[in-house]
Amino acid sequence: MSRRTHTSTNSDSDLRPRRAHAARPAGDANRYEDDRLPRLALIQPVAKTALTPGTVVWAHIPFEETDGYKLRPAVVSHLSGRDVTVYPATTTDKRHRYHRQYRELGDLGSAGLRRATGVELAAITIDVIDVVGVAGALGPDDRAAVLGAGHDADGSGMAEAA
Image (tube, rainbow, N blue to C red; front, side, top):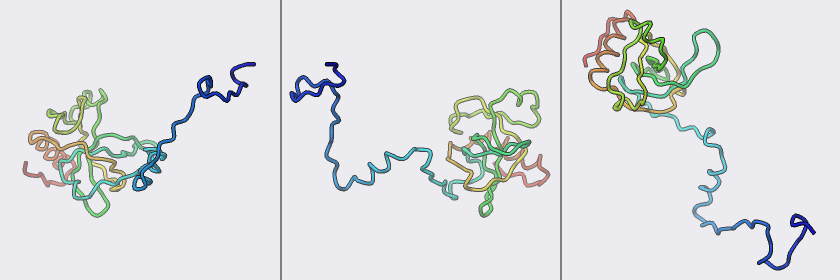
């Protein structure tokens, strides 16, 4: 008889793996239910109070040419109701070719980023639900360079004090 079809009554010689059934505490029933859900299905919105100017967030940034979006870092400029005005950030090399359109971040640690990143000075407006999480905050030098230059570049004339 093969091992696959052989059923043994002696537990010492049974080669089939057995599932250990641990007793679950009564109060932890919901915790085990949540473990079965995929992590991507759990959405926790970012509090509006965390979206202050100079905060670096992870957000769904829409593409310019086509439908769709990409998850990327962005710097919050302004919050008005459900609309969040942000400056998208990128790590691509195109930011070096168009250096007047981007500001390089100097303090990546406080911004919560790991790679060299440039912030685009053209602001876009997204819905608050598109903000996925908070990465960090701009340092004082980066805040003055991005927010001050960004406000002047878009023609609003509202340069913020650093």
